[in-house]
Length: 86
Length: 418
Image (cartoon, rainbow over all chains, first blue to last red):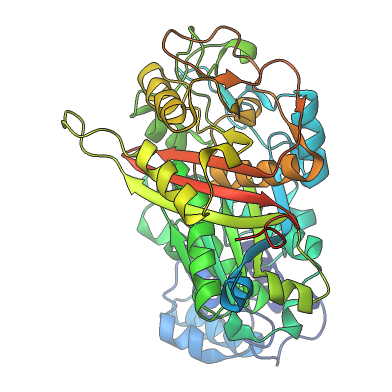
């Protein structure tokens, strides 16, 4: 069962790195590339570190930056949470 | 005039102002002519524990209305001001960056303090919560070149970009560097600067110089050249300008813009205690030589106006020795804003161009009685209308940075005989 949701990621993306003009974060962003949504590697690192602090699970930088899309990031974060026994 | 000199004549075709005197060129200019001050008690934080309680603050600025949403959490307030001013300057010059070659557009800004407010916030997180709480954007937001970089990225300007960190002199040095780039391979340069260091960390860093006024009444806090001068009031904001060659501007159908950059020189003071004199006088002379004009060709001087006895005396002596005692009108409208560091000289350049445009010298407010030894025709009280062909703008930065810029009224320089 997913604990971490796409909506939660949206909220973290919005507050930590802002939103590009012309991007609707509330639309179906799950399978769009972070790059395409205007989030560069620094932005991805920033919200990965927020997830890490909030949930206390390790989110290695390279795995997050390579995950590519919000859906993959959510999936990866949930695997980490499961491993941690959340 | 030779063809090549004509081609490389530098004009300023757009101005964006974010200053304590107003948002936008005309709002600022109206305040300056009306003598309306932007100096007041600091309200961005509680200044009561600090000796300095007054500053020139940019009011009415909402980043959400003027800066792309994506950039707001990534950048410092100083960069927000710079991005807004750059957009305003581009709009003013009717530049659509996407229509110009990306490698022929450059960005050179002045920055004195970098992103201190952003940095303070991240340091608070560091010592309150630990290293993992420091945001990834601290790596770029504090950095002096952040404004240049963000303007460059936002507008797709990939020519020779840079930042000059010469304290108050930076705004003039950015224009000087912009002219160099136009003479090399740039067709357009975004120049000027902003600074914003009105947070506790930023203010405390400024206190170290001992040059700030601790007066508590806004009308008596910053009195350059006055017998009661006790220092200067810090401020935030500045101006960003669009620089082009005259030919380039004409090709775009813009004409001669606000005016021309006729001469520029920079110098660096000898160390304190040296037998050698300060470099301001020679810097003025070199800027005039670069502009190929005589002292009598200059109609107004925009002073650096340190507001500190010995520095004021050095500046007044340099002006008097070049132009003659009381021989040229001198003004310092920065008494309405305080000293804006990287943004200060940029705003002075913008203000001088408006003075040339409207043929009026704005007044120096606050100052009433010149200190002994200050032999200047300081424009006090009211603006003074008079024919203006050329303006000299001076800036001196803490630590010895010195710069002088000669500006010519639009259409005047290109038509004159050489």
